Length: 270
Image 1 (tube, rainbow, N blue to C red):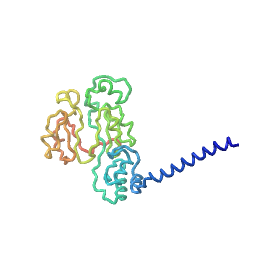
Image 2: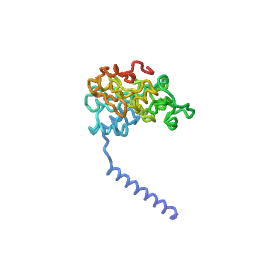
Image 3: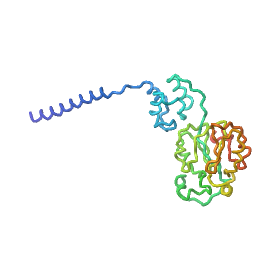
Image 4: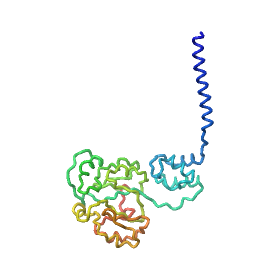
């Protein structure tokens, strides 16, 4: 009998000691629950997209609770989330400019050329591995829809070979930006501004040969802008949304019609 009781006693004693140690450790290392942080976290959508600039919803909630972030960073949550966060923190939401993902390409099938026929896997990622894709413009949208596949909000359609994003449905989750192998998609103002729908970094003559709506670096928009909001970067016109007043002067003088007004007059999926 002793041969059985002694081992059982030893094991029981070890378990008791371990339990005591764990209990003491729990007391020593216990971290008080931050009720404000938990309340903020419960309001956030929980998709952990990183659009707020933090590692996820937990990180953003912690930053807000510590006073290191405002309530306007969560674009997927929209106005309702911002209002709920502001009530918890006791601050004003203020006016927030709506932003949405925008594809910096307008080279549809009718206005651009192809350099080859592609018969491989119909994804942008795969096509891009073969000499930068089938389009003559190696900077343009290939239209296979990798961005559309990852969009959980039905905000993207492929129209005439180019991805178009509905700013009214876009929540700013950034998934499409990550999915695009050409890095064509940016978060930009979705209203009352002008945007250049081109990413081609070739010089003007080269652009004309392959696309009739590509930026040719003519500098007319730069000269016409009364706010000095436009400059050339890598042979492409870039508009500073913070300076742009949407006066329309750049759109009027652009010979390639590659500067668009946001919101687009014809929005996909609306």
